[in-house]
Length: 214
Image (cartoon, rainbow, N blue to C red; front, side, top):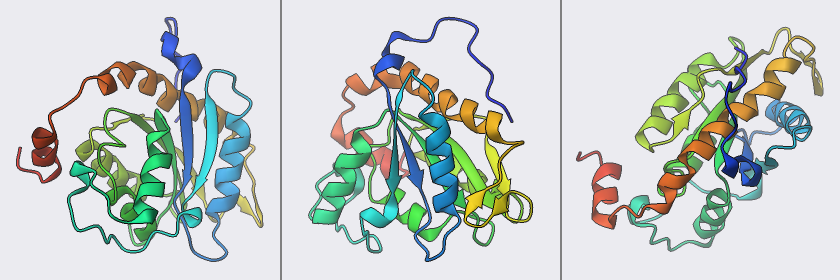
């Protein structure tokens, strides 16, 4: 599950990339906070991109309450505008997700659903955790990202609740290399996709895509 290093030169936009590490759990006593801080600490050792830890708790998003399609980006709620502005800052994302009932958390799915264009033509990687390393949560996230036209990195990091956690920290000796390599994959993909985000797609076409008409 180790992201291979590129054999050729890294695209020049790489030095300007911003990558968000999104903490996808909001429940009290969450293990995700330790995981996200571990990923952030490893990522900050890199010099080829800027990394920021983005915690869903800081945005206090209710169940989706915007009346219009997110593809139109005509937001009416202050919390949506705040979330939109933050997500739009980044070229790529590393989602830190728990696994609840064979899927990702409701909080993370809800946060993703608030927006549309802010995600498009970017890249994502995944760090999952749970009784089976969060693999089924990541599976579902890959499908969601595909619908939003987000490129995903094939390799992923999976942490077991039984063997990789030592409260309140992550015991990560055998995953350290995976974790340090992993964010680079989403960054490289984000650099490759960056030119696409400068090409304006007609609003009506985006709405059709968002509603699944095409």
